[in-house]
Amino acid sequence: MTNIGEKVVCLVAYHIFFMLFVWSYWKTIFTLPMNPSKEFHLSYSDKESLEREPRGESQQEVLRRAAKDLPIYTRTMSGAIRYCDRCHLVKPDRCHHCSVCDKCILKMDHHCPWVNNCVGFSNYKFFLLFLAYSLLYCLFIAATDLQYFIKFWTNGLPDTQAKFHIMFLFFAAAMFSVSLSSLFGYHCWLVSKNKSTLEVFRAPIFRHRTDKNGFSLGFSKNLRQVFGDEKKYWLLPVFSSLGDGCSFPTCLVNQDPEQASTPGGLNSTSKNESLLFPAKPLRDSQSHLLTDTQSWSDISAKAEKGKIGMSNPALTMENET
Image 1: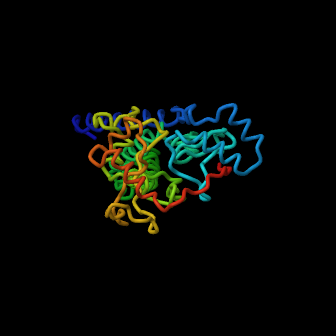
Image 2: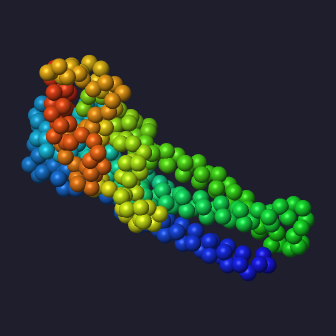
């Protein structure tokens, strides 16, 4: 480069991308995964009762009592309350036990070996920004190196060792750009659908049926749930996600086809019409996502009507890791 202005622009852009890349990578690595709060842990008496009683109705009663006031609405494949026998807690929705960290992680997406950390509620935004800025960083390097890469093959560069560095740099940046673009695109799709990697492979199971879109609230609200309401923080690796990771607004998209009609001449919700679920209020930072829809009291009333003629699934303890 011979133009001073071009040099300044390239240097400024390079260091901005590099700084944001390192910052987001640092935050992804060193942000500790969040664990369920104390209210989800069994009390000492409940632990003793659970260990003392044989598997059966007695243990079911212990879990019912422990989970009755908790904002949990997902179940295991057998319809049981999601209980972790290693952490001795009732798992919040979207929480999973990581076998590498040996602890339950809130809204766990996956354990990433590249950052040596669990990607979950506390650092998922940082992980997305890390992918975005690393992709931009590699694309910038590949774009600025392209003209010299072409000169390398047309013998337009001086015959020095530096020309082999240019070739290696372009190939490395281009290959990382391809792999990062596919991974970043996949996680953008996950954010738009409000899913985690684990939920793609195994859809969440609610009280009455499995629903792969149970947590999706629409593109805009799904995006805000991860990046927050204040757009000025969206592109910075600072925590701005909504909620506490223990409870999430849900939307039961596909209703049970055998659900009885509601009394009073009201028809049950159609298959393609969404009904907010659950009826219990959520944390303030999450529940405001639903302010442009039905109120929680209306939802609760409709949910109670829809339960007529239906029996609750048996709540049994199942070891799930």
